[in-house]
Length: 101
Image 1 (cartoon, one colour):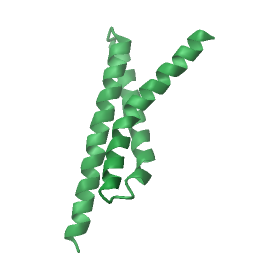
Image 2: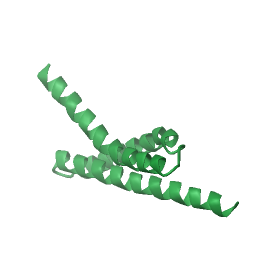
Image 3: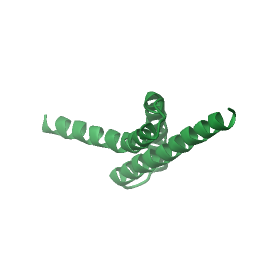
């Protein structure tokens, strides 16, 4: 039972590390007036989970030796990259809407 609890805690922690950067970006965009930024988060999070899962399975298939290290690295990298892409996409979209008026 303690092993299951530890596994659940690790999974929740990895999920929070994956999703927190995009949430921070969405909250910043919301403060700047982009109220629809929070509604787009579930799609961003799902795509981040898919990308991170694929990268972790690929690293495992390639036989990388430090599973905990590459999992944390992939999760953090995917989270930060996804947040940067999400923020850039929302800013460009907002700029295009303003320039078309």
